[in-house]
Image (cartoon, rainbow, N blue to C red; front, side, top):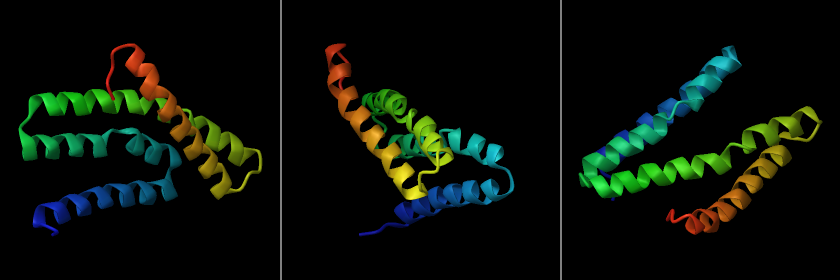
Length: 118
């Protein structure tokens, strides 16, 4: 069942994404700056804290977010490289996403070797 809180959260998150797209039509660098801010992560952190008040769960969430950001970064280099090489948007985006998924799958066991549980 959808609650008012869930709907408000979804609307706010959607507004952030829409704002990034709107800004991007005018200034790509400004949109990239806004997109690079961890706004959605911060909202998720605030909502998780509000819903649970659980410090350990929140700490685990934030640490896992850090480790999952790292394997996602190459997508932002590979996809533009492919686009500039003439690859179609959807193929370039799919390749960037596939790379990210592959790196996520490598990150989990690699992190575990260093005692980091994701």
